[in-house]
Length: 58
Image 1 (tube, rainbow, N blue to C red):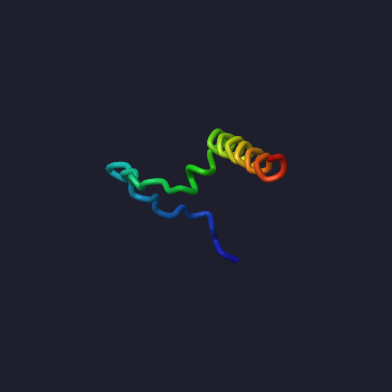
Image 2: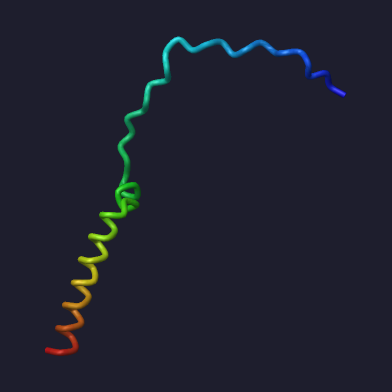
């Protein structure tokens, strides 16, 4: 059985924190926002209702 009572050397402290990467977020991140999805759903429903109205009633 392994003897785990000995402590290993602690990791050396980092002098400065890792810089954050400034990656641009893509379209999928924007589409995952709930207010945008609600807005797009409302616009889509309005367009669908208008197209059905034109096709079936006029």
